[in-house]
Image (cartoon, rainbow over all chains, first blue to last red; front, side):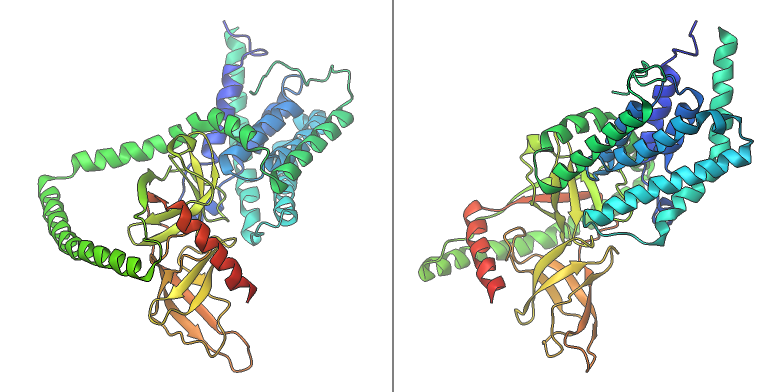
Length: 162
Length: 294
């Protein structure tokens, strides 16, 4: 029997899935709207189980995203750290929010995530992209209820099986 | 990697804010070093080995789809394709025969002029991994890495012309930057009259701009741009693009010239890695320096 509090399979597989989804090739227009899978999944795990996943998880995931996307080493890591910190700081509040309010906090965190990436691109002298940069924030928020529903359900199943 | 062991839970001795600050400083310094120098390439290689399975897994379905579409295509279309390829090959063979004679002549002439003979380039086919990098930058990964002798700054061609160059090398893969990336520029010359200039990417894979041509420059729509070989990165004489628009405004110093890349940057599946002879590269580098000074 797997204990849901120490089960590593589900979180690890969602992390790997999120990293894969973040590099799956999509046709041009759709790629602009590719949600930020990695921070979304990270937000879920940190908010729900802050005693297991925290800043180190955020940083490792960020470094993996950096390597995959070929960006500056540490760029995604920094953005993930900021989001992870906010999650840890406010997880008690976010957890009891109704879904729409949760969506608002996710919107806020994804916007900060994109802003950090955008800012570093600018400082490092890389070509700064345009308004479309904010599209993933919108799709990410729209996906949040879905992620929340699915993962909560799987975890409940896990718990029931104990 | 992602150790879910709870090292960073709520019970740690170091307060959350401090841990956060330390990690932020850590990632900032990583970025600083990565941006300024090349010391982190080892670290990057180690990470890239760790994420390699993900890259492979992501590109697998696309490969499977290609395989399936080949094995399921009917005989007639295969025969047609075969016939077409045969005729193409015949065509190329005829051209090659002429090429051999020309090459011999060229070597002889160069020997007479006392200049170094041009050594044939070595070429390796690399497959583009179906992996999307940052959508705002014109980059992709290929399945050749350190083991294949790929180096940073190496030229990439496709069947129609120059595609880009290698920007980073990992153990099994490399990152390529396309000529259409907004951070990239190719030294070119106009094939018609040898006019030298620089083609700069725009971020749009069907558009290059030539910002350094004066209003009086002899350039017109339809001109073929070939790589000039200056700068030492790209071998000279390969097509880069075709001029599609020339706008001269009387008040401006420079003309607005737009070119379309010859390489099919958005449709390629395979690219060719080119090794040029080292001595050619060196002499070209010194040339470009003097060119730029002027």
